[in-house]
Amino acid sequence: MLEMIDLRIYSNKLRKNRIINNFIFKDKIDKSLLIRNFAENIDTCMNKAIIIVKDLVKKYGDFTAVKGISFEVSEGEIFGLLGPNGAGKTTTLEIIETLREKTSGEVWVDGIDLDKNPAGIKNIIGVQLQAAGYYPNLNLKQIIELFSGLYNRDVNPTELLDKVNLTEKAKSKYKELSGGQKQRFSIATTLINNPKIIFLDEPTTGLDPQARRNLWELILLLRQNGATVVITTHYMDEAEELCDRVAIVDSGEIVTLDTPGALVDKLLKTGFQRQKEVKAANLEDVFLTLTGKEWRDE
Image (tube, rainbow, N blue to C red; front, side, top):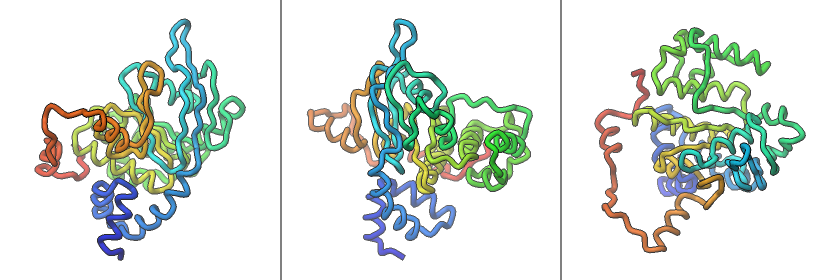
């Protein structure tokens, strides 16, 4: 077992100390082994760009939704795409996911050229959309079996549901699930083809604090298991907690891209001050302390 000081060093390197601790204790994973292995490999993985977007443009008639966006996502990182409604985040992701045609620009995913081999990209990505359309009268096991057939994959539905703590809901219909359960199941379906890259579009919208924090833990576990994660969210605390780097998009353009910590530091150097003093805890922390952080069936 690592000494406490070593554990803090590794956890700081990951920048996810509190969530990792909560998840690992709950699931009895060997903390020292997990953090050691992940810390040893993260630098190597994150030197390689697994997504390259160059001068991406998307026009709808006279309206330009995406205006020459360029960025890279490193293998093994959680990358956040942030911005107000209509900024072009979802359009950009849908182009990378091969769901929407671009007007111009270049997109490479794990070395695959979008223009030449979109099918190859589909084989290595998992996509969780804002509004997932599942057959409401099928149970979760049946839906997974259906998707497995479409991907031509041999998947054990019970093992997959166990990853998102939905084993007991295997025989439940999708329409019977709570909001948090639907989101977790939606993420489970992105794992059917064992993707190298997972796209999550506003995955925690409308969830209560417990469901939101538990979904954070799940997202971190996906990355710890080797996936690269690209996420959009309107919750800045979520992006700050989860993302290694974020790009802020406005009016179809990237206005800044850096680590959350670096962006905050740059703002503070301008003399920015909050009107209200920030405390060491917030109301959500109070809520979770009083009600617990465990998975809820609602």
